[in-house]
Image (cartoon, rainbow, N blue to C red; front, side):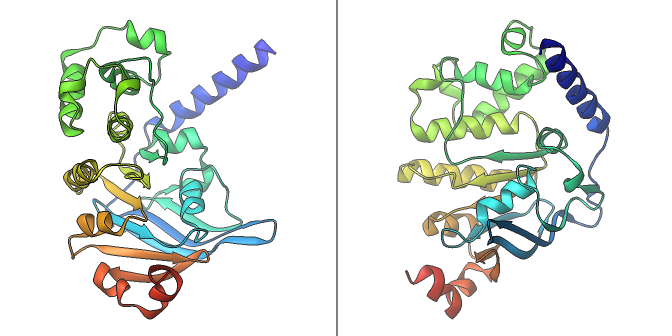
Length: 275
């Protein structure tokens, strides 16, 4: 059993090494292509020929009722779920359907789930340190001396996520919103090119929600962001009346456009906003 585990670990290491030098090509201005993607679970069509594109550096909000396919869409992008049909490309050259979950993360696709997952017994700084050196074990990472550049990167992210004054605080003592920021910071330590964020302000206070909007807006342009959210006030803060919003319903795109446009769409009002 141990020999098998070692063989699997070696295979995974070789796979990650093999793609480490591959870079997505963004010359056509598109970070993510989702084309005619369909997924069925026991006869239920979670995604139904879903097609959308995310531009390089874009911040796109995805809204829609429960069961619209938002989570399944992110599962497909990150390799957790394999679609029955369709195409998924990161940039114009990397076929995501040929990669595993770890490989997709390795090439620059980061995902944040609704519930924050941090090392609660470690400090905020140590959490970011571990994320920076994710290829090491926990113990090895914490006992490995940081370079000046690495320490500078951690300090930069601490300031970005509003936790520079909490660096030595135990992560388990943070508020819910601060834990959310810390997990986003851990993703940023890996310098992802595409960030998928699932209901990132759920359970936050109004002040924390506003700060999170400021954080995401500061990331726009440097990263491509896909934000799945139900909080329409937060969506309004992010879109600022000028960014596109995509509305999903029954596994496909129901409407797309400025927030004011989709809010005035009779179909959107009927199936989502009017409820």
